[in-house]
Length: 281
Image (cartoon, rainbow, N blue to C red; front, top):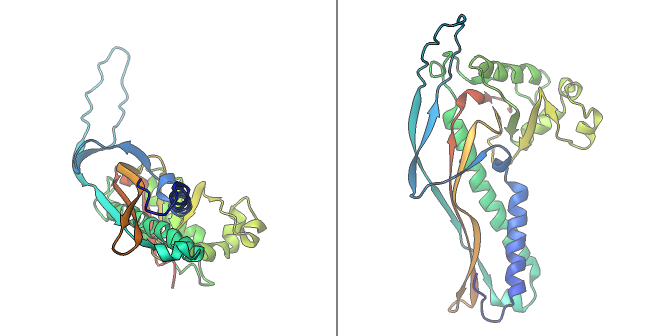
């Protein structure tokens, strides 16, 4: 990290700390993925496998060989970058509101990009009719929009869970747009199904329903809810972690804040994922 002319190391360290702290509050994928070390190269192979079956046998009998089915996939890492400027005049004139707004927007923009990449990977991997082991589609339509008085949110969640159960999937988390979540909070059946009771309505306390933790992000499409297994559904491959560097632009009398990362998401267990559509109207 280089220090621009006229600025102290503490100034740059403070900017970097604010960006990282804000980013960490906005990203949801770390709680819903399994980090995996990335091999060298921008594109590499990862493996998914089918389920094994167990036979009944008698004493002394040899067990039959089980053929495990493996599928190889190619993952190409995504490189994300944002390079805003902080002008010397803003710093020299102590316009800290501009500096603060700039650093916060950097983090928010990067969080939006990474959350969007994560959601896109999940959405692409949702089983369609005939592609799952049980030939059950893992997409269900909400009976009524969740923001309507006719909504039956628990029934919709059960419908999504049942598609995973048909393929021996296990779901422990759901993610949705905050507007879908507020609709969920207003449903009496949901409040009764959580341990938070009135706290869920008065404080917006995020709890579990059907033993699923709830995650929200404004980057998720309103009207679509995803269920998944936070440990087994998605792998997160990170070649270069989120990094902040500084480059002096002498001609503009400014400092470029170079923020970048290189990573990829791979859905290794789609049987653990379901999708509910039409939750917002």
